[in-house]
Image 1 (cartoon, rainbow, N blue to C red):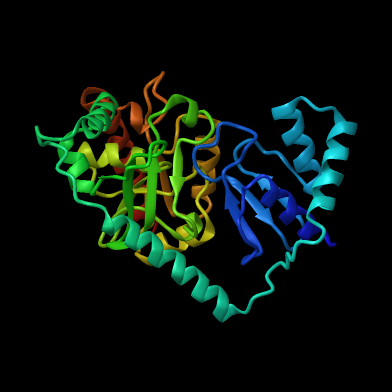
Image 2: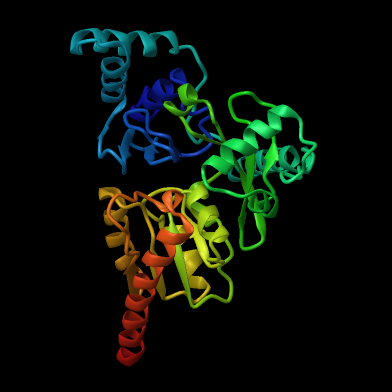
Length: 328
């Protein structure tokens, strides 16, 4: 049993991956309050690394952290637990990346079709209707309390899933193409573990949520709801990368559309600042959104605070853009 197989068995034991069709996975980190997948798992060498909390290690280290954090086990107890996990799965037929490229493509195509059918099979909801059933009205009230309007929910295609833990469902559209869906819980106990649930097979690394064709510049945010808030406030060229660090594929997608200048509205925290520095390595000009003190991300924006911050940001943007043009 090689290191990759050990890590795969551990992650499948904790139900963090469901298959071994790929050598790399991006999963929600269980070691910090992760809302979007920020842990990179590499089964080729049996290692994992979280871009959010900066923790890393191998299969044994993963079990050690899991058992210490959630069950209070010491190192020796965690090691014994690790050995039991491997022993309990030693007869399981787990072969990493053992399927052919064509089989993987068929598997991914099937998962995409299932996600597409699930979203489009749900009934369209008029969130502004006065005749909504009580359970839908509760979801609408939840979103209204978060600062969203019924018109925004209708415009983005929000639907109701009839699944208790994750009732609200949103389509993720990349330059007009449906790429998957994301659902949001409004139950505090569930949100403590995971606020957002993505469809199986969704690949965050290759998706940029938003419309960025024919744009000279874009606002880049972390989460789906961050983008939705900016769109509601009139920013049509806002895109979400679903994490604090843009992947190489996401950067390539943006650059292929001719985008050279971005406004980084990544969260107003250490991860957002690191993500901004990463963007500066790949785009000609990066203007940092001018957050007011105490505002963490676009989800906190009101019309008044956004207008104040955006006015300052656009002044800096114009100055940066002028220097970029002169430097050509």
